Image (tube, rainbow, N blue to C red; front, side):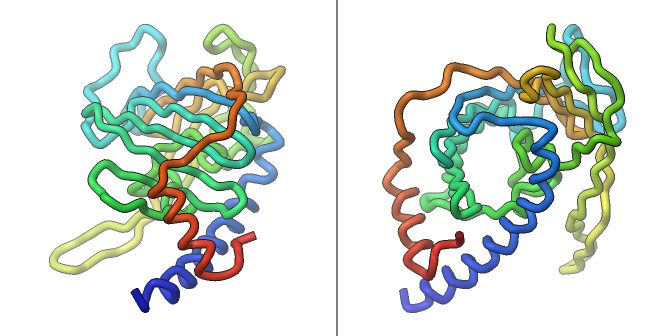
Length: 239
């Protein structure tokens, strides 16, 4: 118990640095697309191998590995978001995002206690990434606008670009090394509302469906509240 506060202080500093970096990356890109500050939406996910084009509506998707997400249900109210991730094996993970602190509290199905995730933890290609949020679209910029097309029945700005992700690879024994892996990404952004319609991250296609905005605050479970209380009590708020 005596080591809890030093650990949380170090974690708080790390998360602050990661949050600041992610904010710089996404600030400009977000002027080209928009997620509601208060809203609810679903992302339906179809996996597709790197190097192949995103699947057409009539294409038969390949088999989905159990560890891949197939659906994300997002609700956001006043800077707090609840993401329910449904994996291919039917299990779910609940993640609570706090804009004020720049962190995510994750309740993985195999962990009894919540896990803190930073922006680096959920970047494209990382262990905890499911994509299809503002950070995952931060690669978008004016110069990558390819054309304007009709997609999912909507007039869309169509962006195409390459994202290079640094990943850790493991060799023999305890050997590990970092490699840069390029991903060809695409995004379809509604021309009028600038709300994402679909996105392809080089591995999977996500199609967005937006619902009526919630009219009441979100209420995180007690274990998530306790985890946040511990983090805040470890030092000054992150922002």
